[in-house]
Amino acid sequence: MKRLLVLSGGHPYEAEPFDELIHSLGDWEVTHLTHPEAEKAVAVGAADGADALLFYDMGGYTFADGSVTSRAPSANFRDAITRRFASGKGAVAMHHAIAGWSEWPQWHEWLGSKFFYQPGTWQGLAVPDSGYRHDVDYTAHIVKDHPITAGVPHEFAVCDELYLCPIDESAVTPLIRAQGFEFSRDNFYSAARAVAGDMFSRNGWEHPPGSNLIGWETRAENAPLVYLQFGDGPQTYANPNVRQILANALQYTAGAQS
Image 1 (cartoon, rainbow, N blue to C red):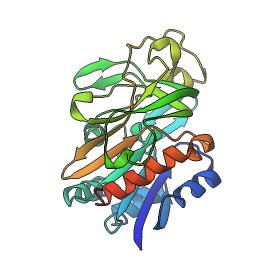
Image 2: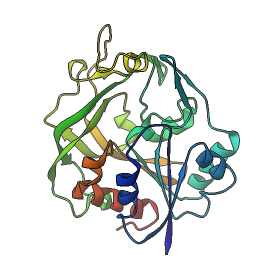
Image 3: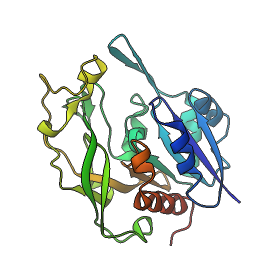
């Protein structure tokens, strides 16, 4: 039986529905590790033998007293993930993993995107903190025939959280877009305001319009890396089309190319 390693932690989620999801994605022997133990385990080789790897984590942050501090993962963790990708073994990153390890630039170069909890720099340019919006009803639109999108309708309904953040579309292969919702400042809330304790606020926040891309493939060293923005909670976990895409992505990045 092939082995699936799942990493989580650093961001809240509903544990039981998520556990049911990760055990529904195919014939995998599942190992689920949470931070900080997950970081330590990967650093000493936990990811080396896994056939598939799913990032559902948001490592490197400490939220306290209305502020956030961030750090890079350990050198051994970075080396282990880089070693995996260099060997040709891929991974899937899901939902809030796009924000994880803010102080590890290579991770976000591989992903082709980054969610910012505070204003920062993206590809040499100053950018504002990113936007979030929960419980958005939208249509997921498949934009490319691909093993990851096989077996799902060309369009299907989703209710999930969406992000407004930089995405380098020139560096990725687009797979899925969100239609029926405008990716503009007035439809999102400021992540920095949320950190400060002012949830669902855009007071004093400005952000340029963003991409509606929510699923793509990129390359990390010699391996495929897939990002899927799906995954805020149980309603999305239970969506059969989301499950099919996630199952396909795990098989694809594990080496099953069709």
